[in-house]
Length: 221
Image 1: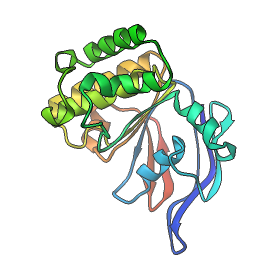
Image 2: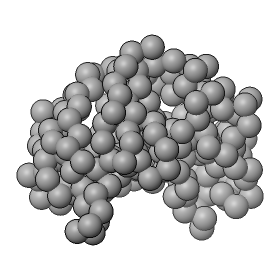
Image 3: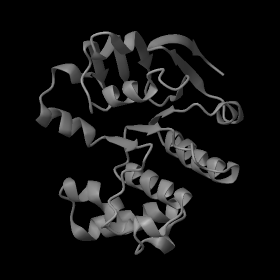
Image 4: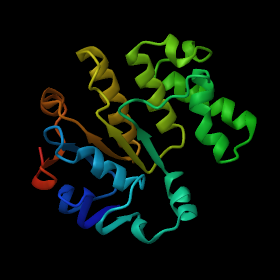
């Protein structure tokens, strides 16, 4: 499903965010990517969903080499990826419903299909009663659910989340993790970047640990 070979990323000549990372993640796996601040977690995720290109190395997603794709082909691959950003990246001028509907609208889905799908996904994450509200009218936990709903709306083959529980209390963390586990149970490959050791211990899964841009640990629970 996901393969990275000798992956490196440099933003400056004297500093590498990632150094020779090689990994393989099978279809349907649930994987944590962890490490201290600055270890390269977010950089690795950005490379995996092609928000940035590596300085060196190759990335294959579902057998397709992202590093050799043009912008049009990358856009097609992204239609099968669900991403939950650390800062949510919700559109404040759009309602909850409109934020979640956006990926389907980009795909050109019909209006009735969009409406039905959005309502069902909002209901699944427990926030259908807020669908006419705007992001700034919601709590942090509610905004997180909207971000997750937007990622799930396309029924992604891969779900990528960057610190999805960083600002949540234990109860909200548990509920959010149940959503990720549910997506994984339906066949979605899940990658979560986190420094939350309590969450990792509470919901054990395969763990990839980074330190100073290098992959230093790969262990099963």
